[in-house]
Length: 273
Image (tube, rainbow, N blue to C red; front, side, top):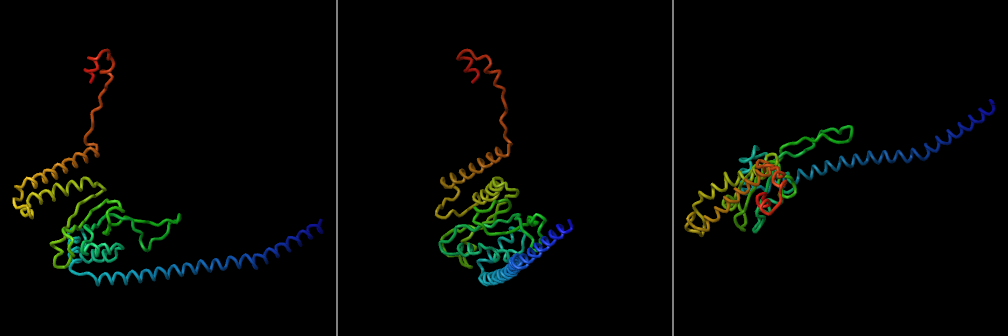
């Protein structure tokens, strides 16, 4: 029995030694380069982030150098309408990845509108640590950003600039060629925000308008009166639809059994109807 255990022990020892050699000679040499590759990847990733940050800083300074009277006009209007300083608005604009839309708006026959959203956006803190499940702690923060108006949900305040002609926008004509407006959509209530904007701002402004361009009669002109009537009617319809959506108008439930229980001849059907 001792001899048998001794032989098995020798065999186990030999196999353990061979296994150890195999792991040391092949498996570990496979693992070690992978570990080194991970470290190298982390280093490269860190270097890439630094390079991207450096490029972003250069881009911001190039954009800052482009700012002139036209941009200052937009910045001052946004700062007046939103709870931000002009310096904060400027930093936000030159950091926006859609900054080129501003230049397209200024160009001759350029974009007809330039839209900004100011609302809560989920943003990850730069020093946020990963949770045990690998996710990060994202917190909603107010953010001003340029948008086309069709790619992001609208849940806050919309500030917009509209061109009145196809002329190139310059520092000297920006205040005449560009109109500024805002409407609030807090909590995503777009219809209510649009209704307030039209009824409390646009319609009073239109009805107090003295100069109607080629229409010399102004408010006395029948076409102008029809136009204002159409706008009033649209706002009324908008208000009605909004109230319907909010369930402020409810149809009364009627028990029809009492009307159809004894239907026997045509006169009964007429009565039920």
